Length: 272
Image (cartoon, rainbow, N blue to C red; front, side, top):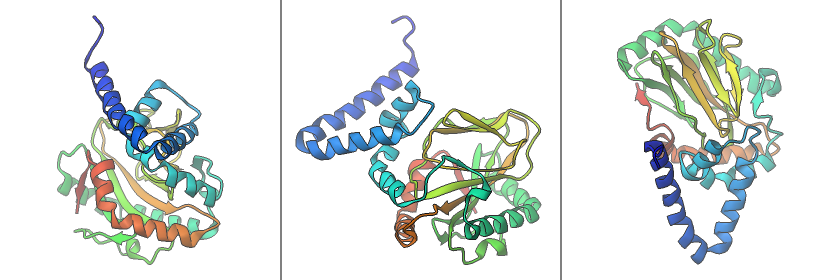
């Protein structure tokens, strides 16, 4: 007990909360509870880098909502093309690529204006998000980028994330596998302290400013230098055998997008 600390206490409390919900659920709805546990086990089992922290956070920490959404995510996997976890731009179909490339060009062209706007609006916020489109819905903003206002078929979220100096996230999970996350670092710093880690694999921004991945994998973003890191932040619909189903699901998600902000982005400052 001499080494027992706050971290251990938090873990115990999280586990107790999960058990407090699971026990009565298993009693009153054993089939549904068993199915949810099975879906969660399959979902988290996709990870190649399996650690105690992974399972603890998935079932009793910040991944609980991803676990609750696991039946939907596994259904998406059945309908979509194979999910490699991390993708190159060339892995996307031509129509998807064209939309991504158009947004990348606009981001670079308007980069200085975007940086100035975020600096004025965000102040000393640790992590800020300037949103232009969120799950298909245009967002009001004080900075107009005409290219981001296009009628995109596949890109559903367009935003810019800004990490202040020496700011990192905790390891966490995204909510849904209806889309892939597309990130593009505006001005990569020549440092291995600016990186993103996904399922035990590290991507260094200095090596490639573009990174596309399945954000329901356990991941962490780190900015360990004394400059602000700006990334274009997009969600693009996964290529699938049922595009109409995915479009409908993303539109439905857009109706509860505000709830996603509160749950999955509660540590961010959303600016206009």
